[in-house]
Image (tube, rainbow over the protein chains, first blue to last red):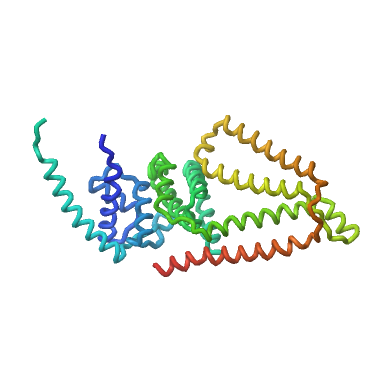
Length: 110
Length: 231
């Protein structure tokens, strides 16, 4: 069976950067957006370590803001390095997905 | 007040709002994170964020386990992998604090429980005998303290499962080691290593404790200054 976790990690990091680049947002909202776009198995617990990682790498930064639901929420912003990383991710992903599509569509002798 | 202590206090306050189920998960996770090499500042920030996530899940009538997944250990391992590790300086401060604090408490207990206190009150003599029993029992007690802390935090998830056999083994083990410490203290009480003025160790330990506390205070506050600069 194909182990999707490794592929998912790098891909998700790029997708999270893209979502944060579009608007300042918080963990639960990022997860909801990812779910709506088709990452159905995603949980807040899956993306939280990735957000910690992106923050540590200086690609995003965060601040606590009051939430209407009670406890303060951590809102994420993209940094200059984050925007550069996102651009290279988008370029690499487009080239990679085209290559993979070509290979997958090959019809060989069974 | 130390900024880290302030944050810890806020987190403790928020913890009280958690449901029993969320609280159990949080306690296990925070204990496990404390056994790791993750720096104290990161642990408290993660704790604040996870508590917020747990409280929001409660308001949505959702179980916390549905938010972070059932494998809490794997979740914590991911956080440890992605978070900032303790520096050598932080580790040194942490160990020094525990050692100086531990020795100071045990030494004060020794003054009160040995004949030193009687000599001070009755004849105004401040001399005190340092016995091999005291030195060895102090070393074992400190080692045991470190050992218990490390074991309990590292195995927080397993210990919550209420494994009766494991609990029995732990209680017996603790009783055996503790009895050995007391026996050692009593058996070697006449093996005098040196006689000193009982204030000398206090003159050394008290400033050491103060210096470590100030260094720790400055070190933890530097994270908060860094955080506000980044924002």
